[in-house]
Amino acid sequence: MTSSESLLPGTRRALLHRIATAQTEGRTPSLVAAVQRAGRIAWSGARSCVRDHAPDDDTQYRIGSLTKTFTAVLVLRLRDEGLLGLDDPLEKHLPGTGVGEATVFQLLGHSAGLAAETPAPWWERTPGRIRPELSDVLGGQPLVHPAGHGHHYSNPGYTLLGALVEKLRGDSWAEVLRREILDPLGMDRTTVQPQAPHADGWAVHPWADVMLPEPVEDLGLMAPAGQLWSTTTDLLRFALFLARGDDRVLSASSVEQMRTPAAPLETVDQDGNYGLGLQAVRQEGRTLLGHTGSLPGFLAALWFSVEDDVAAVVLSNATSGPAIATVAADLVRIVAEAEPRIPEPWRPLPEVDQELLALTGPWYWGTRAHTLTLRADRGVELRPLQGGPGRGARFRAAADGTWTGLDGYYAGETLRVVRADDGTVDHLDLGSFAFTREPYDPAAAVPGGVDEGGWRGLAT
Image (tube, rainbow, N blue to C red; front, side):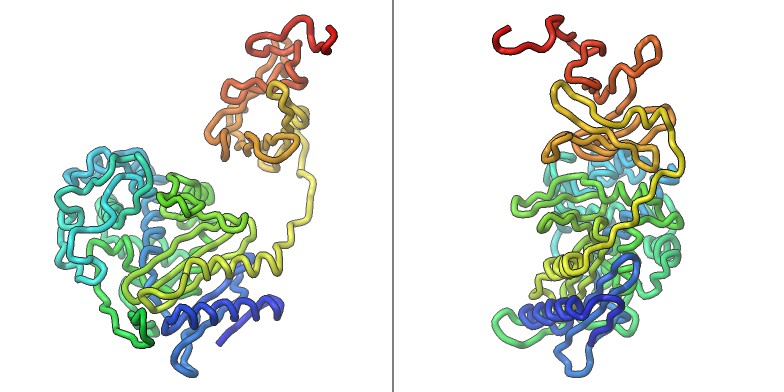
């Protein structure tokens, strides 16, 4: 089964071939996938071991840790409303947890030092009612690493964040989720408990083509870490929100913060980072953001590329088998490479600010040439003139006439114009570095001064 809209036949064939290969080689009972481009579902497809009975884009699968991204959005909403600060210790709002000075920010980015899992028994295959209190989730020694010293993925950490949401909202995590995310985004097929039509979860024997049903448990307090069921259609709606923001849920600037790296991934074979409830990986020169998920009987992956404006979701009902994250990444790549995004037409700025225009062009940090360009939002971009690696960044305009770095080495740093006594521009100050109009401009206030003899040759 496959449906499509607007993709070329060759692209559709490549997408279908990729998921067919994944279902066959991964030995999963079923697999459903969909791709979104420019905010519209452009393709969906599915494969099943049951003849003439494939799932579709309305079939629910359990999405496991993709649930964490929803929980992170709820926490960011609390921050935006002023009900908490990301640097607040969790104990400020939930005293008695035993996690010390671990902050909300560290919990969101998995750098709080908490254990990866709960105490035994295996929480994913046992009912949540056997862990009725946070102490049952955390155990006697919840911290296995010093807080803030690195990335260590923690499922109990997101249980704490769910409890934080409940404490500050005065309502259940599930109800807050429905009211603040699912309803506004129209995600009516994303639920805490399965609703028909939904897939059943299976374990496939590693050495024989036979299957075993997996139990479906209500995870109780662990729900904010992995409880949800969803469909490809709903998850692509969520991907669009994560790429663009939606003021009914979370602003574009706040979802951009979620996508900003908070801690490097802990394994050396992964080129990526973890933001606030979002994974970020680099594959073949492309940055993919999203999350993966697994629970006994199910695998899920959602990736989106902001630059390509393409998102993909892949869901399957097997405990292990298909390399689900790789399949979703491949779907993004197939579309982005076969039918690259058509850029928006160039248009001049609606108006000219002569003062800002005068700042554009070449500037020199010592002898290193850079260019300053003006953006449509009155922000600026500073890049090395010769390209390649270097300390370049985008800057957002502030009300006081300065700019704040958005990425790279200068993220968070302040760029400001320094003027001479007569009001003319002397140099640009960027984190104490002086950028002048000429290399070591003798007319500018260069720190350390400029030799009075000026530039000279070897024979001088």
